[in-house]
Length: 419
Image 1 (cartoon, rainbow, N blue to C red):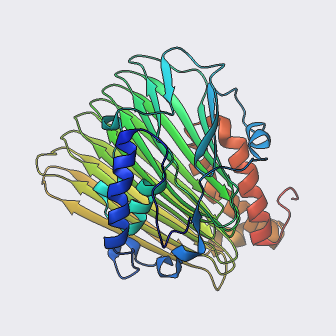
Image 2: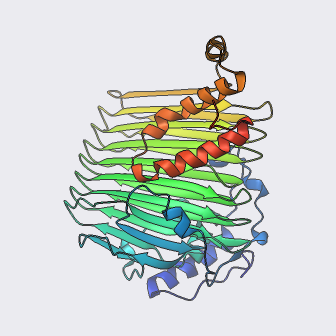
Image 3: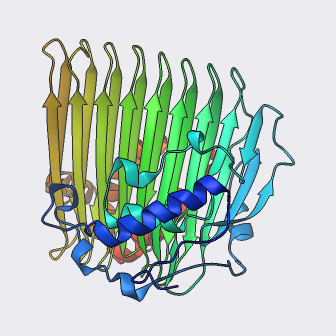
């Protein structure tokens, strides 16, 4: 089923069929994103050839999910397995009765069509081909033991994958959710994750992208945070040829807090693209963003972050920092922080750095007898440590550290276990 001659999937409830029919019309009329637009500036989106990919009607069999789960440090409360965006398994054997996982959504009011929020042809393609949204409901005041793990395995050659996840925490609830992406090859992923954190709730969320180096992975994360609620969300980008994460968090009520973290490492010709919006829609709200990345070989990175404070959102406190290491003469990093402030009584700060490993720090280590290649390894590893220490879902820490270590070993041309 070619993406240039789109035909809606025929499965699912009536509301989903209607959504796909509308999306089919939008695919014909909406433009493709362009690097001339600010939202896609510095990206390789003009190189995307939709005719190269096709929709996956029936998923193949995956082989990597079990090995990935074995690397986690805690027993998951639930495992949701996807192949090319299609749900192939839901293991709820350890899941509390206070959590409901729905893969056959009959009520369209619990999800938000992506094309209605950010109209482009890619958004419409997501709605056109998404098999079914996955809705995870956590009851009020529940404290879920163990992470809820969603593994998205990419298998179909030249396949389009469109996973759609909605996590909803009730009042005062606490939970951890980990989204893991593996496989890929020559694939295109257009994913959506919606996070709803009700008053007094606390969601710890991590998205780890480990797709093959020829994949295109474009993720859209939309979150709302209620009164005295907290969202901790961490995105890790280590795989894919083009890896894009667009995160928008709206803090809707006083006392709400958003803590966003991102980490990426580029090698070869990879492009890592992080776009964020910290939207303060109410007074006395807090947001804190830290994005750290390194680029080696001929890879590139892009960060565009916006702190938005709406009229009436007095006493908002927002911080945004993006720091980049450039590890090769052909690598590059772009960092564009933005402020959109419509109130006076607020505190907003942003910082951005792009540069090589600090030569004074390197000299200090070398002057104490540490070999140059070991000194560089220590400095780069240390650069990522504070971000890794903030992983909100601790059970994925070893997986992330091991993958990062392997990539750094290749990027620095040194075995990280030595010295």
